[in-house]
Length: 235
Ligand SMILES: *Cc1c(COP(=O)(O)O)cnc(C)c1O
Image 1 (cartoon, rainbow, N blue to C red):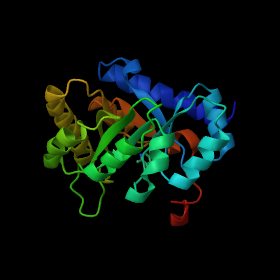
Image 2: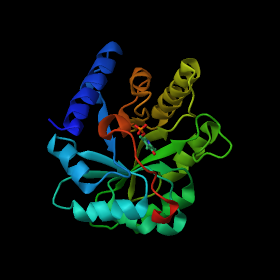
Image 3: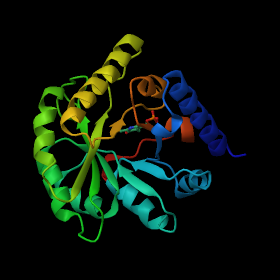
Image 4: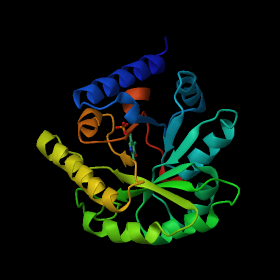
């Protein structure tokens, strides 16, 4: 078996174990394979194992992959930073966007979503660790943003996404993820259709599942360490 196939089995196992430990059903948790910097062949290999959801960060790189893999029924998620003048190809070619953190971007995505396609699935990115230079809407501004964005016709707001600050302190790590769950539960009272809490990466997927994640975004644990960062030019 290839290492990607082995890694896939292993990650599935970790998700199942974490779900059972949290007294949740494993089917409640969707595995999103984060495939930035990976080759088309690597994506194909993982797809052949049964993986359908793939997440990409860099626009040009992702458009090349979507074209090269158009024979596969992949569900594409955009999870990287969004420049407002680059929203059109995202609106036209992706199924999900996890990194919406301001109204202007959401409005453009809605306007540019082709009428022939189903509404674009959206997660609001939350700056849950209140980091000064980090993307994301602040937790106490999320409800107002959600109120605005949920009126846009061609979007389907599904939930929240977060990338908590990197830390070795498991208490801090856990509390950021728990804060996300609290915010999500609060917003669900007003918007019962919200069903997606996108959090948990290779290093914290088990804790994230314990804290209610419904979608974990996994790169390294599936594909191995990233060899080289994608340069800024590829944005
Ligand atoms: C790269 C990335 C991931 C995956 O991180 P790993 O640690 O490799 O699992 C998840 N989410 C986002 C937004 C990313 O950019």
